[in-house]
Length: 189
Image (cartoon, rainbow, N blue to C red):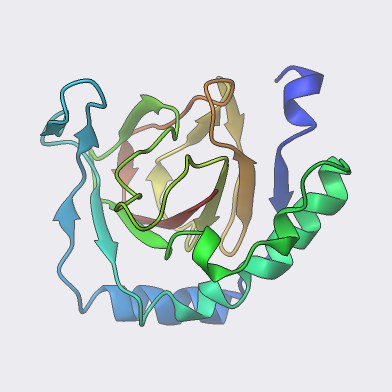
């Protein structure tokens, strides 16, 4: 990854404890997930790419434990980027999305994309996502590798990766070969 690009990427090891991650997965396994889809900003249509697309779930109750830790992550990100014109740690809960959970079963993947997402804004909330927070709930699967800017990112249970949500940071998840991969994502504006 280009050094200038990597200056705006932060990985925090053990952001969530293994115990919290296991509890989250136990709770997620009692819920019904839905097939992920992409929204075409030009047509307004939702589509999924194939039967190999991941499954997603939004649940305000399960995600509460993550929401309480996001301010810490934003403060750490501010310390890394060290710029005077923006302070992510000044943002309150209304400036990030409730974490969405991702489940990748065998064969599931996510194509390369950038997080320029418009569907998180409902008319009351307005803006564009400027920061992606991507958390990892387990590492007991094979495959499912994350690539950011065409570089493999090694992660383990409880880690979080924070990076800008713009065209300079394309990312993808390779197909899971064995097991189930769980993660979560939230976007800040």
